[in-house]
Length: 292
Image (cartoon, rainbow, N blue to C red; front, side):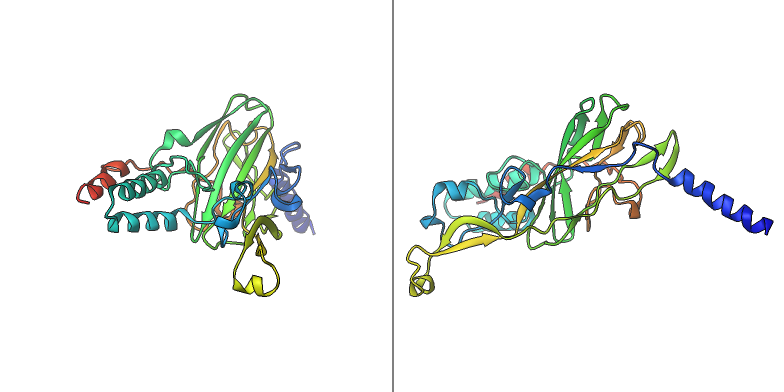
């Protein structure tokens, strides 16, 4: 009897040590991504069937659903067969922009380099009690982000992470699983999911029309209305004071089969320092371009 009581007491003590400290919980702020339809927190991603017939306003509100690896392959293919220097230069510039992270219009991955080569550019400083934005794009078997490490101006204050997440290249149905990384000094206390947030978007009107002989046969002279369920979504999560999550912590670091920052099933997110290539992507592609 005494042995059983001692075991129960030990279990309770261990559980108390592993439970998050008061005020160490994370919570979702505001509406989840596309729950309220297209808007500031939700940008539809789609390639209209007949863009020449659509309004400029509708087209300007859409992003591309293409994955960076697919867009890079298409750009390199155009570069390889280009007979016109103008076409070749445009293809080369697009390929370099995808590799280096130069902004590209309409691309959800704009500004996020496909090559993991510039670590200092992925360090984010969180203002005291403020908000930091982290962009992540997911495509088959991969996820890339513009952030791999957070540094805090005031570790004693809670902060907010504004996630901007897009699923591209046919990926759909993922989840965002934010979790605080709890620690007491050098002692790790484990972590739990703050939320399991589905990223499946509702049907979103694109504001574009697809015209064909079939729509005309149905009496729709201007074309049928198009919609998409692919989107770039914004989710805000209020996190506990980083004094409970270490003053400096990894925010990303996964490249394969990622389903959300801070998955406790694989431990704390690890910062993997990008490897500097022997020659940069610009030199490599310039060499490829030099013979065309």
